[in-house]
Length: 362
Image (tube, rainbow, N blue to C red; front, side, top):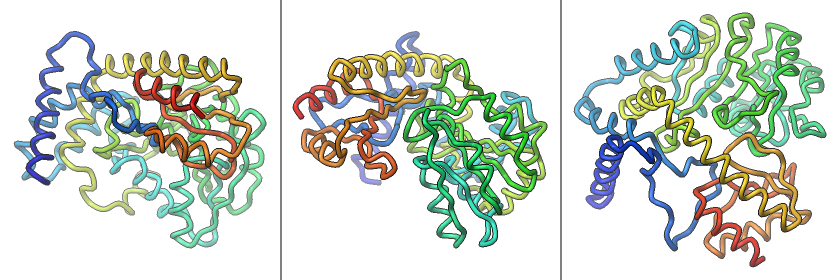
């Protein structure tokens, strides 16, 4: 790490510690882009980690020489209490992306297929193909929810992946349909429900399936600290499942894959409910502003329950992506299953005003 980057990191941590003592606003750790490029491409939380998380990382520097075993145990205990499960029902990961890879290694082989939606988060399919197993993509239904009936009909499925809310569409699969689906899937087939965007969802027909782990031995639920907690660069996630399922997954994981700074930040973040509430509220308000502005221009946006939106441009999206980039606004990539839809992360209000201004210029 260069002297400049070390200095900048120290200043960031110092700012976080100072912000932790301020009553409001609590989401002020990350400065807004002033004249530089605006990054709205990776579904990151523009408000950054909780000030309590930044302070916890600063304290954790003193223990950087130790292996993170004790810190892992402490976070496991906290998460177990939060989800009303035992610590043995949780597996920590280096981001939820490691959880997805572990699930592929644990439950797939050349005789058992991955079943997933199209489009959805691609990482699990990439891991599957690298393993030499087959990935079967099922298009979303007319409401941009998972087509659970068609997914269940695929034979020799070892792992079914359901991202809910879904990336890149921002849409949800209703809780009643998902619960019925879980009841119908053979226990020999693992169902992995990725709830990375759970904290942004407030629709009446959405609910986490973590409570269903108790009665479904083949259910794995993935969560991450990258989104609402603003820790995408720190890498920490986890899975919740029954003991035997967690043990199968743990056998595929390297020792100590989560670093001490991420563990300290995650534990502090998990206990900061106000940071979650405020982040979700700001995201929703800004998202509504952007969707309304696009609607006035004649563009329809899918109903989003996340920190990004997917808008139908009614034309090839690639030139628009390139033109926005030329104007210093970086948005989501092309999704081949929806080549006329543009995915845009919801940043701070001033960043979204930059996006709208650049979009109008097109």
